[in-house]
Image (tube, rainbow, N blue to C red; front, side):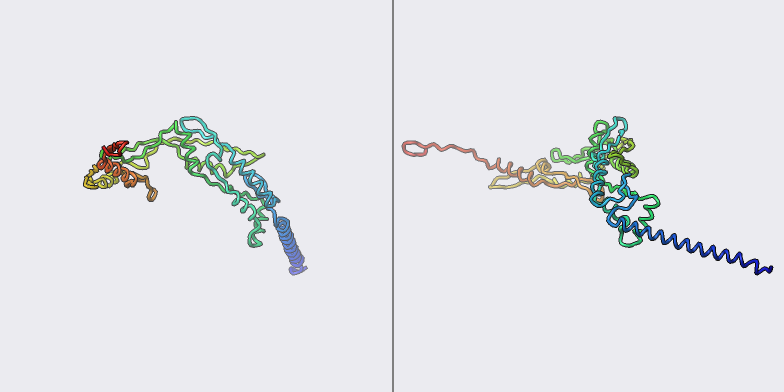
Length: 317
């Protein structure tokens, strides 16, 4: 047997193997495509398999069913208590709703239904593949009402931490003085919020209930937002606004407004510019009007003298 005759059967076997492999890949690809197409058609108006929110499975639900389920999940999460151990004090257990947490139901619903229902067929293919591999978890769309959060932290730590006092300005006898600021202590609401958001990423709702690990909230030193040095320049500005005394004439009489009078007209409004708080001195129109009216009224006041008339003749006596 020649060398060429020995190679021929081997070559033929490889060709048959190659053809079989191609046919197998073709059939497999066809089955996958057919299966994915069937999945897209079956869930055209329903949520794809494997889509979850906080551990709750939304597979196969239509819009109304999903909306009702999302509301229940949100309610369960908002009613979930979280232990907060305050440094040097007791442990509080507020609900997430009491801390000002808000969840955007509409955004969650939109994302749940967008999976597999995008603008291109490829979106459906990707969603179907993910559903087959291990499912997709939708994140909670969470925000916090900062005012509510800060109010809760302030109220619960009021007996444990003395808040910092901002430097302020006051007027005494026409002289603008600095009311010094004071160092205080406070718990950080922003830290609390970030810790809650981290825990919400893995929250699981089971049987309408959920639980979260506790948080240790430290109380630390807090400096005033407005310091003595920052109001020093405003002190000079306010003092220049008071200036010298003012003399005012009315119906031939002169009324004098001293620096003490003028100083009583000043008010200091807290303002914020570029993230920094400060004060803006300005005159209060109502105080000015009341002061002028009062002083001029005293200077022109004439005591009433009753008129006496005889009843019999009407003569003025």
